Length: 438
Image (cartoon, rainbow, N blue to C red; front, side):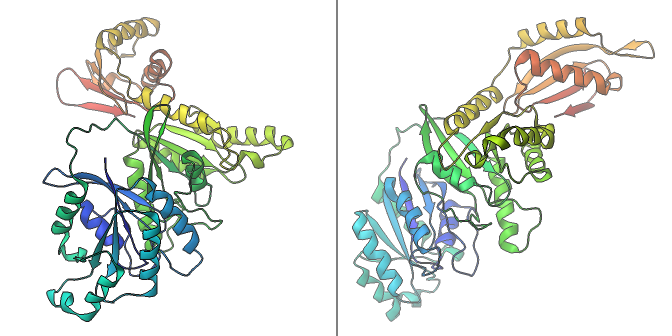
């Protein structure tokens, strides 16, 4: 699939253009420069059948402490890009930063289309500031106003002409991994270590990552999408933090597996809350204990004991010890994520399930309710990710909590689902009443 990147100096409307072309509000937008720091990715599908990946990038030549990290991040992201959209403010005229970005793009040898933003009135395209844009040397600007969808249809047509169409391309099934954790726990460092370049900006400041960031790569012959999320703090201190948390939760919903990054020097109830959020949505969880290279030999046993005690409710979740600094444990982490993905997508044949049901009821008889026994008539698996099992029973009122736990444990142990969340639905043979357990 072709890739297109939007680049430009800060606050020229790159994220607004990104959201408009994608067709939904993917990137956080605010009237202050520097909101977007990392590279964000989404898929664009037009009515004419054009499909491509679109990248939103941080503002270049900002002149602040994020200038060089953002430039390195954008340069790494542009390696595999087919087309660059250079976004400039069509009403403000050119600035020295616009010239710097244009000169830098020329050194990369990428094909560039010039996009003028904020042109919501035809008269703006007749102003002297608009004609200044030709001086950048990238031909005629494409006038747009993302907020009002002005010129975006024409822009998509122009992109399609540049890219062409590949109707025969078939995308493999991608494994989506969401990296979650408290702020400044090392999520972005872990993403960069896995991918092998500086796709995500890292700094010793909580809240460096403000939006969820998608990074694609291949491992063991399988395509992956790593979703680096903003650190989810206990409380939001402002609008940006609130929207960052909402974006992180949305990213978690579209993940196949959640990787919960834990700092061995600081963890507790907050990690349990994040894990429960993932499990409630049916997402398997891998606990990645990061910064393990900083733990001394004398600290190993006490730290592992504390992890067992504090994360006792996550005893079923695989635990992998990692270090983004030394790459320790990264292959094991990805292999574990693949195992959980495959398990969550496993489907047990109905005949095999009902054979196990006979074994389970023979091993422990169903409860009696005033002389009337609970009858488990039939079971089938109706869905995957999360695996969902529907039990047909004679009376929902006869079902007890201990027997539910018994059946849950049998599914975990006998069917091999002990590392992933699954759902059980109990439905009366007659009537519409049902009980759902997750």
